[in-house]
Image (tube, rainbow over all chains, first blue to last red; front, side, top):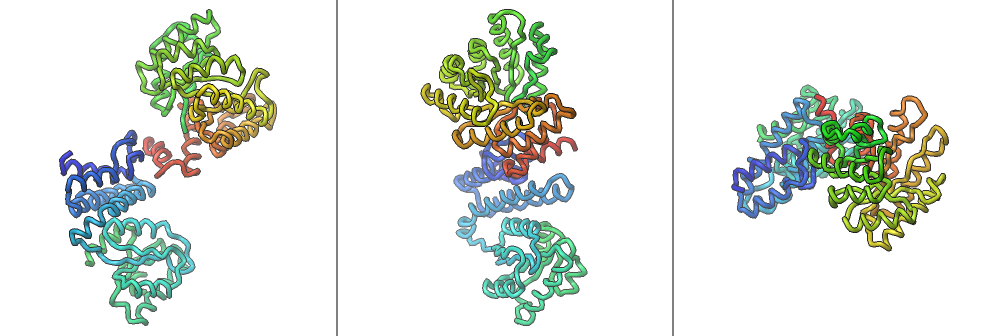
Length: 226
Length: 265
């Protein structure tokens, strides 16, 4: 298989959400054919440039997946399957990217704020950002503000993502931002917020850098902000 | 879940006629419909009760040949007569699923050598020379007898599909749980074997049968049922299977469940 065919095949399988060859895809009858894991390894053996693979097969495909999700053609598990493909590909590619001097886009701390146990959305963001080249530190859910601030400090994180699903817990986002200010760290870290009750105006009100309605918008805003 | 399409069965009057008429078009239509609806195996039973044993042998050969010509799914060769099973096997080869043996010595002696010689999968019914045991213990003991005979004859346990058998709920309210508990016990003593059930008998004599079939199927799948002999065109049962597998975490990325509804869009 020549390089462009291989890159196209990887992209196709990311969109189909097939991590390994036994996986089914969104479409019927693909099981048994080589999937992302096998194809990415094959590409590396053939000497395909890792950076090129990320751009042409992974990033573009996730944009397609995002559109399909937006159009309601794809469901949450479809998107997660595709994100899993990207995550797996990135794991395989990581040493090669490092060797090429491609650096991480930076450390990104993620958390669902104190009192809130909802983490489906945050987990999607986590896996998508990992695929986009960030180093993710996911603190999980119901994370006390102090712990979030400590982690940002200790890891020297460039980005912080806060999630909340409840109107009663979204105010804890503000306490995190206030804490960052008190410690004189507000300038070192960009704060992104998301979750059903939050909004553009809420982000402005509490002094966050951006509100993102979903993982795809998060990636978009990150690209335009860096 | 492995789905075995049950529609090609001579005990159904319209199918009996198709077989007696050797109506290849209607026969293959039934096979194709079932394959398209997601059947992994096509069951073929040609016991019309008309004619001699020779006639059934000849009918089996005809039916297996015809079905193989139109669908790529393996065939479940269904007969109580080992000679008919053999005739089907000669055409279908090792991809076939043999249906079936019981724990009766006369059945084991004749069917196990076929399964071994053709290296096929084999359905083993939880009954013996005294009929269908009325208790879980009795059914399990029949299954153990079959497993022992298989080990002696060199048929690996992972080639077996144990059928715990289903008696109508309407005559004994314990009948569903006897089957379900038998599945659990089979999974304990023969974890490498599979289980299979022709479940629709459970609702015989009750109204709105599909509701009972659905409830039973959910519970049987939870208990460890691996394969079901049913009408794959009955969408409610297929929906039950897909939903149960999704809930049990057996449908990675929910592909099978989601696909049912994508198709409808």
